[in-house]
Length: 251
Image 1 (tube, rainbow, N blue to C red):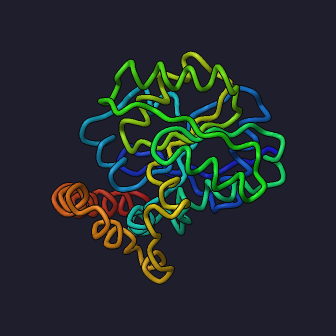
Image 2 (cartoon, rainbow, N blue to C red; image 1 turned 90 degrees about the horizontal axis):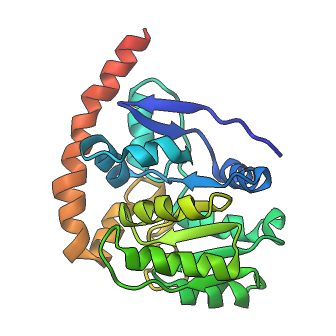
Image 3 (cartoon, rainbow, N blue to C red; image 1 turned 90 degrees about the vertical axis):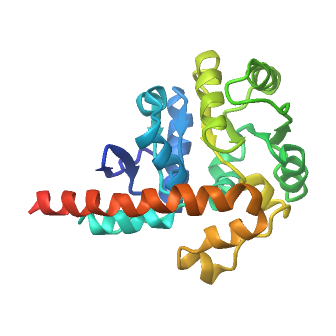
């Protein structure tokens, strides 16, 4: 099934309007087409990085930008672009693996909690999921690329969830796509860790209110307090005038 999604541009950022069902169908369509691709579930941290540091290759090569950050949906509303659903990376991983259309596909999970993810999904009847461990290494390290390449060459997956966090997983996906252009790569961050129970997920009421970041900050304060409060929050506030400006230009 081919699905066409509306894309919004906000301050140069690409954001696609897709709910969970749409996202799964779009990814399966990418597999069916055989051309592979890169999926970037966008949150505040990824968007901030793209606007302040930049990653032109990713912007050129990524083909699907679902929203995995409630504050981005708020900015789109302020900009007058309507309601955009959030597609959480944890939900996307579960829904895609469980979809009947993915039953015959080989799905890889590389990076954090990859072995746990393999056991977790295979225990639930998804024998087509395999985990691939990666070494601890810096962003862009050849060690990561070599390990990812070896996993793909051995398992030949149709879909690979890269669980390293942004931007490390994006640099890895770009490198692996050069060698394996038919694979669909999905940036998944901590999705495998959350789905397998290493990090309990925030209660539904916090997720619905856009406060999952508070829960995550409590789980990993040494890393996330600085990112969320000193980096993401000021950037988000600074994007409000950008969104208002786009709304005014639409009139």
